[in-house]
Image 1 (cartoon, rainbow, N blue to C red):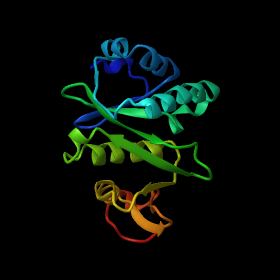
Image 2 (cartoon, rainbow, N blue to C red):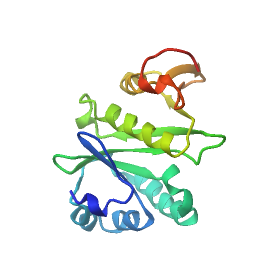
Image 3 (tube, rainbow, N blue to C red):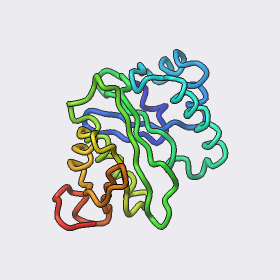
Image 4 (tube, rainbow, N blue to C red):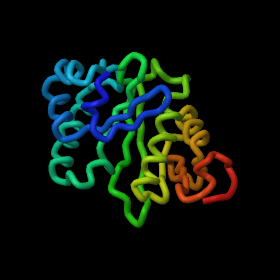
Length: 184
């Protein structure tokens, strides 16, 4: 894996999270093979169906329109340090409003059950705190128990239901440490 080329990457014990920039996302969208070669990775993330491809093309335009804030809404690819396999992605869904934003993530189902997403989310929350984010929201479908468990292990607490289940974590206090104390 060529981490020297991965601008603004985050590293954990087993993972490297690196954001799409305008340039590398354009390369990903136009020549995935060259993208993989340049970064020393193999894409095995979420299925590149027409919905995801459309989202990534739109994201390329959004990054170009707001490069100063792109880290708050770009996708960060999640790669296994040992193999260079890209297994998923994580992002903040929008630039924080009053210190609050929302997180989203997805992973190739073949890689679930190993704690990778929890590891990625904890690193991503620490990064968010450094960027001045105070509170992070997330939503899950009621039947998505795996995602709910990832959120709980990462310090999130359930706070409402509106068809989806809504979760929050305060990045300013002890809840980020996963103590489970206090409410939001």
